[in-house]
Image (tube, rainbow, N blue to C red; front, side):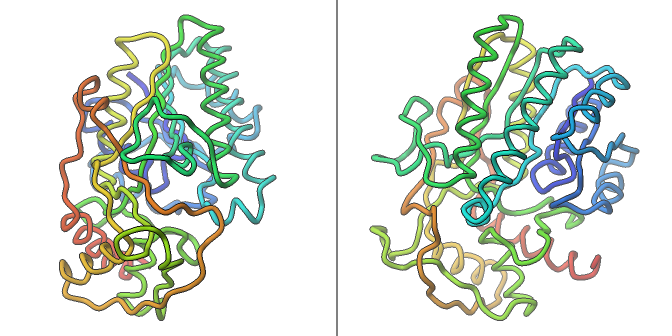
Length: 335
């Protein structure tokens, strides 16, 4: 089976590529390298000991998408390509709406033309908006607090409508919580361009001295220590969830939605303290104003994924912190 992995050179995509290949799938990576680095492909190939087919492609350009589908006999698509920073989406919302929605429509049109019926979509816990209760379940109401979340919400609606119109389609929507950590080899991990938008790469860069101090955005939320609470999941566990989703898509028709998280909520200060303890390093921090679009608390009920997909998160917080630090130390040498 040949799987097209859009955004496959990115943080989640690169780890997913490894798990798909380990499971016996052929992987084609499509990426425009806007928020990833070309040399990740070489490091992926070093891990799996084989070459990977890669296309440099802008998925908002339908002609490029059509050309890729015409060249390759694709059996399924895992669609991860997209802009992903909550704060940035509030500053440049039009770019987020154009990029994230247009790329999905282009891929779906190409799938229709070339009769590809299996699709796994990278969604987000942000579609739950400001939750009235936690943990979050797939049947809870959805809403959003930022443009990034709305692009995921709108894409989910598009997929539901497309599924209703075509009974041959098999669509799996995966609502991610907060991936951290890295591959245990230390060869791939989260390596954002510029100042990190996510917590863990910011922590690791402060720990190395690359950045002077961690800014914690708000300590007045209604949580145990006033800092935001999230469900942090090891990126390898998340990647394995995509393998189970693809397997499910080949056995079922219609559309289904699954949370991928650990079911545990950790505050920002929990993460800082766990990182310091796991790696014996200090992470200086300051308290800053709340960030636009953020919420107080968000963690998953992933029992549906365990029951239906046979998937659950295996790695604990200490492992996440140690693998993230191992990657950051390798990253210094690579850069």
